Length: 197
Image 1 (tube, helix red, strand yellow):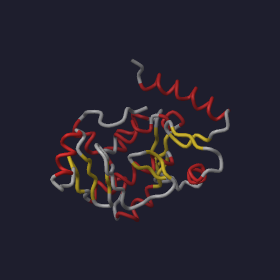
Image 2: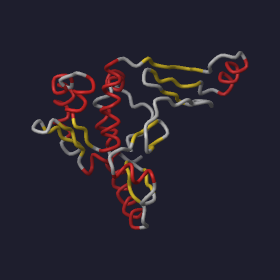
Image 3: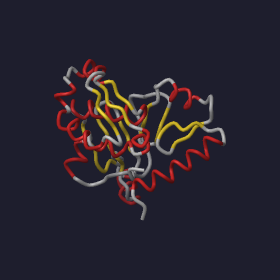
Image 4: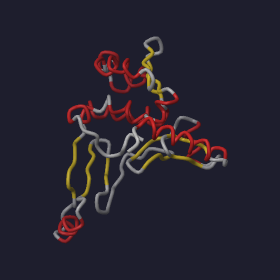
């Protein structure tokens, strides 16, 4: 089984092949046609990310309808039953087929914004995060920024510009960087959902 760095090497090869064929690499393993709405959003740093991948604009509400579908609003995230029989039982009983969910608190919203910008732009200006959420980011993320020093090959915090930016390698392994800011990931110590690359 390949480790993250070996997978990153393979992804670099794929990026080279697809970009030489005319596609635009917009992030992770996602590509778009030049001039497409997705490519234009990436170029303008207006890209956003949902559970389905990169999209060109944010919506406040995503409703997932099928088995294992994930829904989100500004205040909550929930997932439908992953087992078809359980999902069908809930539907037949005229209940929402929700398996698990989370009401987002203020900290969740701050971290979601930070992670989204790193995933979409490879960079976040913490001044904007401070203005939006009324926090002092270097103090709020003191532990995470300290840990980021050990990941200098993936991302760096620049105190002069009050920003976090991923390196070229970090753009490919951005999930590794984002996991440091995911309090649930840190609490569980387990990898959840997608592979890091």
